[in-house]
Image 1 (spheres, helix red, strand yellow):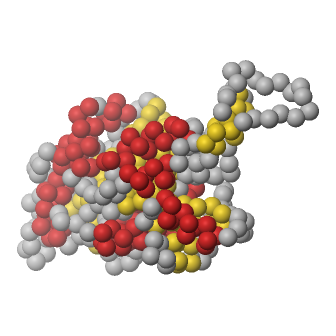
Image 2: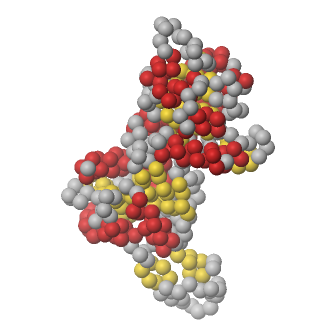
Image 3: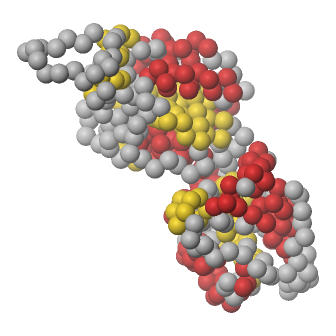
Length: 400
């Protein structure tokens, strides 16, 4: 994705400047043409010569510098860039951009830019949590700027919390995603469900299934990378939440139902990849059930059918369902498309090697309401997520 792309990196003053140097090196190694802008504060941490050596290009440090040829510097950088990355992005530059202030080179280039802008914040945890900074971040998100959220951990100042620059592999993944899909989900709100639900029997036991949540988390990650506003409603999983995604944690099918139905009217796309339990114990014991009789009977009752309810309620929304089968895959999938009123069903045979729960790959068939079935080969779940999102975009174009 990087080969031949013009990427302008704006480096502002913070201790994470040394990570920006490594990012520039990685981008150049990937084939990108990298131009670097530095604020005066950034130069207190790392000298321009470092970035000049890593990028192979002149480093820009002042608004009124004149490059060879006499062009207007900030306009040239703004119009010739495929992507602008602000890393690390301090509270100061975030505030300037959010409020339309253009009083130095970086803020002026961003104001003049028509390409995507990716902001990678890094600052003290108290600064990051400040209501003014959070307001500025929210404003920029609404305006379509891209973000890689800062990470959690120990900061240089000794504090613990969110504020450290995100890992470089996360930033690189976001850059590649923006360049690959050109923000095609920008302005679209997507809700994804993921993982299993757990249905309690007593205080120490519950019913659940083998879902790891990997497919749903890959979908949320891919959608966010392509510019969507993503809400991920997740059952209990052992996965790291994707960057830039609102995560709602639930346990039971009833909790997932409530969370989904509350947010459904305000979203554009719903992808129901969670493995929601069909049944729950009719009576939940307040105390641990003791082992006494030779057998134990637990009466189950139906959980709400979230996908069917969404199929009945949808208006402008595009609805995607998932079906995990062990037999008669195409027959069962076609029936589900019709009975649930979905726009697309992703069906897989979980008995196949490389497919199903807990794996990093999947093998699926895409089933459409018009009867079409598209069989996909085994692929990484993130690659599959992008394939599904491509189909969603094609369906949205047909609807509109």
